[in-house]
Amino acid sequence: QIQLQESGPGLVKPSQTLSLTCTVSGGSLISGAYYWSWIRQPPGKGLEWIGDIYDSGTISYNPALMSRVTISVDTSKTQFSLRLSSVTAADTAVYYCARDGGIASDYYYGIGVWGQGTTVTVSS
Amino acid sequence: EIVLTQSPATLSLSPGERATLSCRASQSVSSYLAWYQQRPGQAPRLLIYDAINRASGIPARFTGSGFGTDFTLTISSLEPEDFAVYYCQQRTNWLTFGGGTKVEIK
Image 1: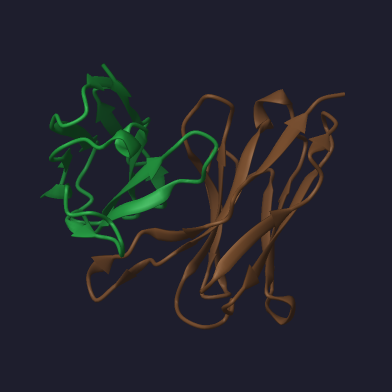
Image 2: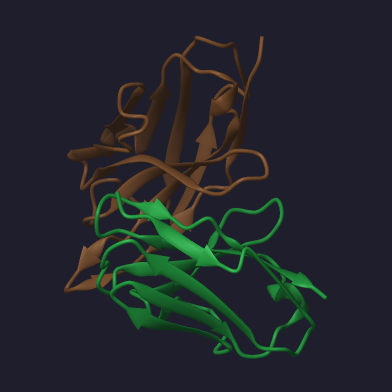
């Protein structure tokens, strides 16, 4: 059974770059046409999609964050990563990595696998 | 960007009652809509995919309906563990979530 685990610093200073890694176990980043996604949730608020990488190739970003976000994948290490530059207090959130089943045969399969989430605080 | 509007923001009900949650899209998302449950301190859990299909292991009391711009999640008889926040989400045009509906104990 596939599992995802986020890792990275829990505290980042304003204006610096937030870097997180998602490690995939029990499965592969290159098997199947999935979206490997980053999603965040500020304290007490709703969910916000950051971006994703599809089938180890096509990358999409939330337009609101596009200028600051980079998502990459290391298939040999079964990891994918998030970098968010020039962070402010508004970037304080729980960050989730997730696997989205995408659209196939005219069905949308939803985000069926989530990591447990990692809390990142932006503060000096 | 497709905006998903969920209503009501909060639903106060008693165990055993029926819950009806609404999600409206700013433009058609066809059937490409999912519903999630999030309990405090936990990651979201997929309930419904492609608008009407229950995910693996989801009890039959959860039902999704709708197509295009108007969708509903119905919980036929609330169990204590169902009091949580529910989100809808679309994948037609990038990916967006609704603002959530909190189902709380009355």
